[in-house]
Image (cartoon, rainbow, N blue to C red; front, side, top):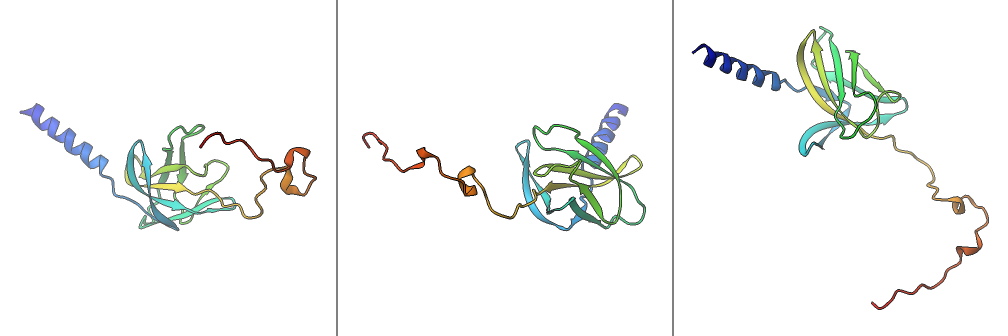
Amino acid sequence: MRLGALLVALVCGASVAAATPSLTVRRGRAIHVTIGGRTEEAVALKAAPGGWRFALAGTGKEGGTLVLRDVTLGASGPRMFELPLAADMLLDDARFRPDHAYRVELRRGTVVVGSALIYLSPLKQRGPVVFDDRETGGPAPADDELRTSDKGSL
């Protein structure tokens, strides 16, 4: 009887821990990402010079710590970061990587208050696209003339 009650308590406790409330991330757009073959809802953050800015709604004034884990398959380098909670969060481009997904957990002490999944969109480069030296205005090499090629029997 006690063993059965213990198993029920463990299963119920695990399901409560797995069902942490989701955090509302502001300054992003809703997308779907696939991680490990499973599709999840995420928030894409737009890149700005210096990093990615976002805010969390409904976190109150109690403070806390944000724990960010890089969940991108095959990611190298540091994969976990801890930041103090602020009204306006900045993920700097020195530590965080564009085109990566991060699981964000808000912790107060050892308790996980909420979590979210964010995707860091790459910074869009504006300006001319240069493919090779021929686009820079230099003289064209001698082998740059048009020729016919044999396509074989079609």
